[in-house]
Every structure is written in structure tokens, then in C-alpha cells.
Length: 390
Ligand code: HEM
Image (cartoon, rainbow, N blue to C red):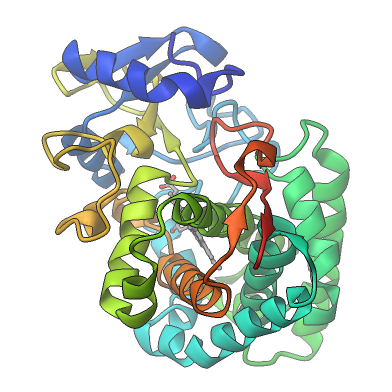
């Protein structure tokens, strides 16, 4: 049975998804209260775009028992942006969009490059390093925290909590999440008094449908940026480096050809999407992929399975760095909730890969000692990636 929380989910999900595909493309799982599993690309896109029927709303009070958000089981702390529907969701998103425009991301190139070099400098003289803990995690933390407006000096407070407390961490998440939320609340209150040009200030000063956001709403928005971008982007960087350690013939081309490196990042996202899928609430009787669904049902849109749909991606279980449609992958979702940080995440990954290959052409991951994230159903990745740099 397809169960995103089964201990062997990472080993079996692709074969289970292929079996569902052969029998029509939509399966039923009895796990965690029961949910439909959508594996075909076309169906996943159709549902993700149809928010009127496939709602992301989360009502933690239980007043609307259908509104259970994007996680199975529902998150303890609702994400007010990801777990609301238009028009409110679009208004909330507008507050953050100005920080993720192409020109803003372009302006981040020297910042990200400097962060990459800084992390590599810190590892320079060590015989063995951990590409997750010493490279991907600090790089992602330094970059995204500066953007959000968090004091960079505190990055370890936030990231360690994110990795322990996020979907990848232990099940006992409440303590760490509460600690991060308390830090974010302090920051929000400080920005109300002294606004600056960062996302935190835009959230406390901006209005949504004529009203200012409440403190807990600002914290939820900031928390999604802090906790949502770390595990995922670290996962992308480490999955890429593990594969590259075992596939060396392309290294020189990736270093010298930015376009190929950017396409390679799309292909790594297609093959190993850090966020494996997202849930939706069915809020009207409907038919998806030939399957009847009832108002009140839950659906899991498997980005990972859609990314291996042979109707869209030829030879889907293989990596092809020059795949022409690699960028069509659904690793960042689709529709109104499509990831706001995707350009930034791809930029971090490309520069992390290219710079490591250039500075340490003989790097080697000690594959047998790599450790995957503990709970892998929603976010998959690596929490230990030991490697030799020379
Ligand atoms: C490789 C890294 C990343 C992956 C794979 C990823 C994946 C995703 C996915 C799949 C969604 C849509 C969820 C859904 O439809 O249910 C999403 C939403 C979002 N992501 Fe990312 N993400 C990444 C990095 C980031 C970063 C670095 C940031 C910001 C600094 C970010 C900010 C957001 C936000 C704000 C949303 C909510 C958008 C909305 O609901 O309107 N993400 N992400």
C-alpha cells in the first residue's frame, strides 16, 4: 500500500507509483485516514491548478473538518500562505513577491557566490567533511536568512531547529518549532517598531484585504520561509553531489557551461524532488484521472511520481543532464501555490555544485555512510553526507 509514512517508503514509492499508473493513474491508500494518490503528470497539474475543487485550506479549529491543509496528517501549526486559497492567498503572496522577482534573485548572485566560497573556505583544510552539515546547510541558511531579515549571526539557532523540527526531523517537533516561532515573534515585534527593507518588515507593515496581519500570521509566513526553504534546498544540493561523486565524466562541462549546470539542477529536481508531494482537500464531487472523488476526500499529489511519468519524460528513471524538458518538472509544485523561492533555490544549488567541482575536482562522497532524513514521506534528503575533498 502507498503510504508516505511507511519506513520503506523511499525504497518502494517509485514502483508503487508505476503500479498505480498502469491501473489508471489514481490509487487509494488506506493510510493516515485514507487518501487518493495521484501519480500522472497531467492529473497532478490539473488538480494543482484547480484550487476551487482541490483546496489547500487548513482550519485547525476543526470548524470546517474538510479543511486539513497540505500535509498528511495535518500540520500542527497551519501555514497561512500555503494553506489558504485565493483570493486571500494571492493577497498574502503579493506581500512576498517583490523579494523574489528575477531582478532581486539576480542581485543575489554575488551574495550566494560569496556564501558558497565562505563555506568552502571553512572546510578547506579538513580531511573529511560533511557536505550536509558543513556545506549545504550553512549555505542555505546564510542566504535565505539574510533575505528574510534574520540576523545572520543566529543562523545556527534557526537551522538546527529546522532540521530537528522540520518534516525531516524527529517526531517531537513542538519544542523546537515553538522556539523558532518565539524568535520570529520577537523579530516581528521589533520590525513593527522599526521597519526596514526586508520581508519581515513588509509583512508587518503590509495589508491584506484592508487589514494588517496579526502577529501569529506574520510568524506563520516567516516560519514557512525559514523552515520550508532549508530542508528542501539542502536536500537538492546533497542529492546532486552524491550523484556527481559517482558520475564524474560531466564535471568539467558543468563547471564551464552555466546553461548545462542550470539544466542539470532541473534534472536533479525532477529525479529527486525534495518535497515529494502535497495534499489537497476535495471540496466538491469531481472526477480526476477517470476516478470519481467525493466532497470531503483527501488527495495526495505526488510531485515525485509525476516527475517520472513516461508520457512526459522519456526514460524517466535515468538522469540525463541535457534533457530538453527537465525544467517541466513539478518539484516546486504548480498553480497558485507554486514555490516562491524556486529561483533562489536553483541558484544556490547551481553555484554550490559548480564551485565545489571547480575547487575540489577530486571530491568523493563516502556513500555507505550517508544518512537519509528520518521521516521521508513529505521531504526527502540527506542528514549526513561524509566526503573527502581531495
Ligand atoms: C529545492 C528547494 C525547494 C523546494 C523543492 C520547494 C518546494 C515547494 C513546493 C512543492 C511548494 C508548493 C507546495 C504546495 O503546492 O502544496 C512550495 C511552496 C513555497 N515555497 Fe518552496 N521549495 C524550495 C525552496 C524554497 C525557498 C528557498 C523558499 C524561500 C526562501 C521557499 C518558499 C516557498 C513559499 C513561500 C511557498 C508557498 C507559496 C504559496 O503557497 O503561495 N521555497 N515550495
